[in-house]
Image 1 (tube, one colour):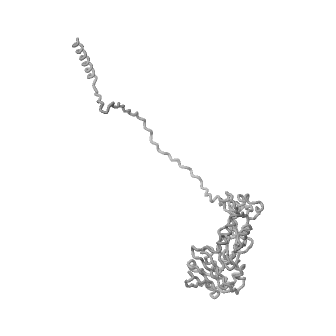
Image 2 (cartoon, rainbow, N blue to C red):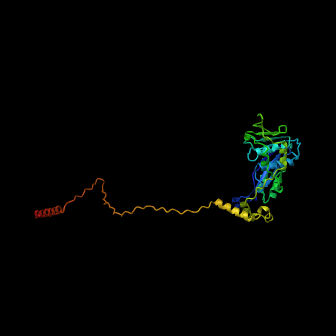
Image 3 (tube, one colour):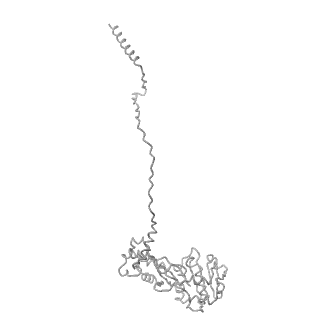
Length: 363
């Protein structure tokens, strides 16, 4: 019985006290694929960098094939008598797809394994036995400085007694192109996402039994294409092509050599990961950076002239005459009467005459 799962990617290089400049750079990602053997309670972790391969169904099938040979599930010869039970999560791009199902049916049809049960966890309950090994590995990863793939390998080996690591970069021709090799032989399984349990048995060649749950009735789907003979199925073992390497990212290669290398100890600077980029890689890296910046020619700014109204001449302001406040609340101000000059003169003359008459009477 085997449980498979991918761990969270590991960044390389890694320092316990990460320099601040590393937060703004893309480091090399290292993939960790765990295969937990329930019979022995041990976990095999396959490690490889993004420069070697990706995280698709071809990589999953290739590592399952390598694991099956290491654990003795099959020995590259027909007449297998073992039953293999595999548990995985519902990731469609890696585990739950037609390519992995074709490979497992191919093992049964060619006689390598007697029966295979491929089971998936219920969505929302995908924690499995591999996460236990990933947890102990993560605790050791945070505390250590890692500069090469050998450091990651030793970190996983000493993280727990149940953890073992296999560095796939030291093993060439591990990854095979299983997709294109098995597509001409097998059809797609219809409504694959509806089912949780798949069974391939030697008694039903070319048939996959699908179940929605443990108590539901199995539904057989014949996926072997018409006109395909047994010898054509067995011939796939001899014509399996190697999967081409993913290749290095030119931007990361230039950044590792120029910006990361000064922080690496001298004894590890000769690692191939920190090699000097070629002229072609530097040109590609500069081109990608220029495209990302989205250089656009600056447009001339439009000068908007506002229409200002002409200023009006300032007119003299009328000052209001200040009136004295009455001394008492009852006092009132009488309005001044306006008289003509003749009336004023007449009034003066009358006053003079009145004063003369008063003086004559006294005499």
